Image 1 (tube, rainbow, N blue to C red):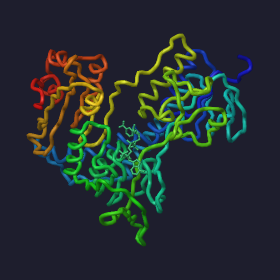
Image 2: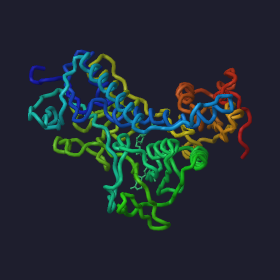
Image 3: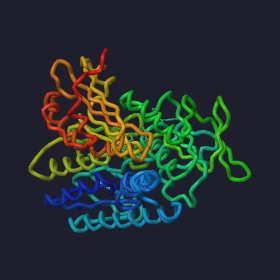
Image 4: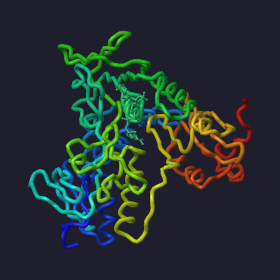
Amino acid sequence: MADFDVDLFVIGAGSGGTRAARIASSHGARVMIAEEDRIGGTCVIRGCVPKKLFVYASRFAEDFEDAAGFGWTLGTRPSFDWPTLRDAVANEVTRLSGLYRKGLEGAKVEIREERAVVEGPQSVRLAKSGQIVRARHILVATGGWPSFDPPIPGGELGISSNEVFHLPVLPKRMLVVGGGYIALEFASLFARLGVAVTLLHRGDNILRGFDEDIRTRLRDALAHAGITFRLGCTIERIEELADGTRRAHCPSGTPIDADVILVATGRRPNTKGLGLEQAGVELGPLGEIVVDAATASSVPSIHAVGDVTNRVNLTPVAIREGHSFADSIFGSKRWIVDHATIASAVFTTPEVGTVGLSEGQAMAAGHDVRIFESGFRPMKATISGRQERIYMKLVVDVKTDRVLGVHILGHDAGEIVQAVGIAVTMGATKADFDRTVALHPSAAEELVTMRTPRAG
Ligand code: NDP
């Protein structure tokens, strides 16, 4: 013990690293954590938290319109002020970052606000001060970073989701590139804030990997909300016109002009220049740290959690991995994270909530499936007059009756799926769903009242 300055050195104070540091410390470990950016990581500083606050802002537009049908008259025409939202969100991010810091300090974790690089299997160098810290264990929790690969001429004229939170003015026209979580969430929210949004994606449909029925219905709903789709397209160059307009050129079709081009074509693990290869840590093709189920890298004293391992890139997964690492190495309980059934949401409007296998995945895995689905107009829309529908789908294994997947498109889909995810994780059968008494009137009651499987 005396040979080491600390028991654990954590690189990266995001969701996974912070949880690991606090838990390890609670088990009696001497812990140091280094962060070169703001404490809190992607989720708190430039991801889930500020994004969700923007989503809330974007949904007021519909609320104001819908209120009229329920007898409300709004005195003046509602207007939206971007700087007010942007700055309020920035303040909230600062508050949360402060709470993360307090949490670490309260747990007696030593914080170093500078870049740290791995010097060897059990040593870390702090880049600014040059200090070498000898650590019994090293945990790399450096997350990921937006990537646009391969680079294209004028690519630097686009921005990533890192910058989108700080736009000086609300653009009139925005081009969003990509068809994944980030592209769709920002396309949806900016469209509802009044921006003319075009979404350009290389595939023939959005959200590859999600259930086909959800993909198509979401695309149609977003098109109905005013988003212009250019599918089956890639950008080959971007140029800046004299008035500052960004013009994106594609191999076919007319060029697209926008005030802001948001590139959301995925993220890459943050491992560049961390000294990992020199220390003998095996990296995968995207630079991800290859780890076993217990988060250990090819160097036994170096572990990694979260997006830097490029397994399931979601905040709660990183937190759980950090917790399991700390309990297993410094506590009395060894446990590993089960990545099998993880609920997730896409915070578009309408929202997607999903847990378990899609119909396609279930069939590819050899299941004989029975599909239950329901599409209906939400009660609120009957009076507001809004043209919207909710869609719910259960994927059920014929042989075992087990519910393999639940997929929802509509208001509060994420909230509903978080709860129903418990049932799916527990291995609930369709019969279990059927014997659950409905909660009326709610949208979620459809999940327990569907009785007739889809024909075919
Ligand atoms: P995703 O991997 O979800 O989507 C990337 C998109 O970019 C895909 O549509 C992909 O197309 C496309 N793409 C990739 N490379 C290129 C390229 N060279 N040219 C053109 N298009 C390209 O990444 P995101 O950036 O949206 O999100 C990153 C991660 O962050 C996600 O994996 C997710 O786990 C997490 N996240 C989660 C959220 C949530 O839980 N609500 C919200 C935001 C992010 P194709 O499908 O053809 O590969």
